[in-house]
Each structure stands twice: as C-alpha cells, then as structure tokens.
Image (cartoon, rainbow, N blue to C red):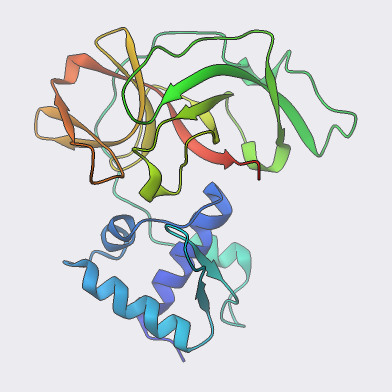
Length: 240
C-alpha cells in the first residue's frame, strides 16, 4: 500500500508524462507536492521504485517511467486527482501571428484522426536567444491526440540550456499559442521585442525570471514589460 505522498507523486508523474511526453523535474515535483526540499522527492521515488510502480531509465536526464498505477485508480481518476501547480498572475501581451488559428487551414494527413501537420517556425534557441524564423514552407506531423484544444505551432530547438528538462538540441517542441502561462511553465518568451527563447518562467515580485535547465546557464531577470509570452510547451518530438 502506498502512503498519501507516494500516491500523489505517482499520479503527478503519470499525468505529466501523458501530457508532455517527458517526466517532471525534481523542482516541479517538489512544488506540486508542497515539500520543502528535493530530498523528500528522492525518498518518494526510491520507495515507488522498490514497490514496482516507477522505473528510472539509465543514462537519461529526467527519465522516469510509470510501470503501473494502483489497481483502484483509473487513468481518468489519476488525472483528476493529480496535484496542480499554483497559477501565476503573469499575463503579458503576445505579438500576434498566424500560428495555425483553431487549426483551420492546417493540412491534415490521410489518416485525419491520427495526425496533423503543424507549421514549423524555424529554430528557437535553448542556449542563447535568437529570433524565431517563420518558414511557411515547412511543417511537422504531430499526433492529433497530443494537441487538444487551442492553436499550435512547432519550433526546432537549438542549444542545450534546457537539457535537464529533457529538451535536447535538435528536438522539435510543440507550442500551444497563448499570452499567459502558469508559474514554472516552460514557455516561448519574447524579450525586448526581438529575442525569442525557450525557458522556464518564474515570477519574482515585480520581475520576470527566465530559467535555464542547465547549471551552465544563468537565470535572466527582466522587468515585466520586457517579456511577452508567445506560447507554452505541451509536447516534444525527437528523431533517433
């Protein structure tokens, strides 16, 4: 039998994996369970491994795999009971663009229910900010079940500053367009109207922090008027 915290953590990891395609960071798990330190998360994960609910994949960052859920818990109940991060008051404006509005006009594959073609808007820096180049001639095929509602577009990642979040150089990230994001979300952020970067967003008083997921990179702090959210990460595609 699982303890309450073990149960909460297992559900949170399972929901995060099914929503994003990769496991949450220790910081995200700590915040979701409202623990004071990451050492508590380490102990919970070890206990779940020993009980056969979780498995760690060797030599991969943030690579947790849910082997099984408690028998009494269906997938829908797992989603409903998963702890949610606290919402942020961060709500900047967005520079408007034709990012597949309502998915209308997006070319659909032969198997319409299985996949959609999203526009690929160039490379976004996950190391140093660069302008995101829109290439109207390129698209990427994405499973329809990954998208849900809203407007979406894809960006190719350049750099390694988000490697501890499981995002590698050359990956393709799927972005749900929007001008707001929860505190701690990974977002496409526009800085000073001309630099675009993929980072974790934190609100710190009257300032906005863009955090890397690599200790080699420093957190950048900006005034609230200097950062605008262009969308939030919802999925990731990788070719081997």
